[in-house]
Amino acid sequence: MKRFLFVICILCSFTSSAQSIEGTELGLEGTFGGSNLGGSFGIGVKYGWKFGEYFIAGPSARYQRTWFQAGLNTASPTSGGFNVFGGGGFIHARFFNALFVGAEAELLRSPLSGNLFLTNGGNWSPNFFLGGGFSMEFNETWRVNLGILYDVIDHPNSPLRFQYSTRN
Image (cartoon, rainbow, N blue to C red):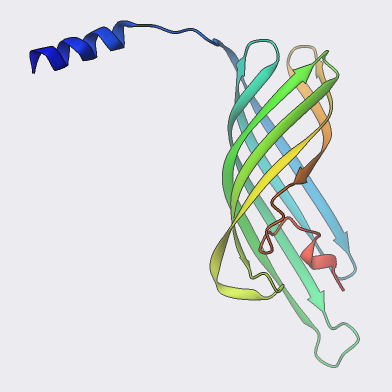
């Protein structure tokens, strides 16, 4: 037992400093889309830790509300809506205060099935985004990221596929 504690103490005394955390950031993102058949809006929150001059990583959370109105030209139009929520993580690399590339992974709870029908229970949908775009910091207090992220998984149940509310 003494040897075990001695080994644990020795191992815990080693320090490593591959990357040091140099600060944190709080990010907000918004989405909106709509048509005469419905629409959606969403908000995402990201909390990131800066690792060196170029990298930032951390957890994220998302909420999305979608509404729809189907059968407008029929005797009994149908309308409804649903909520999507979930969380995940992200890592971004920023270069020259002008560009960023990133990867984001999310697990979202959606009431949709892969055939566009609402279900009684929630289904979890994995999403993994790769992309990049424009990134610029202003006055060292806020930053604007404008980019395109592509969902490489494109899960059939994903609420982030081509907007369900605007499909024919």
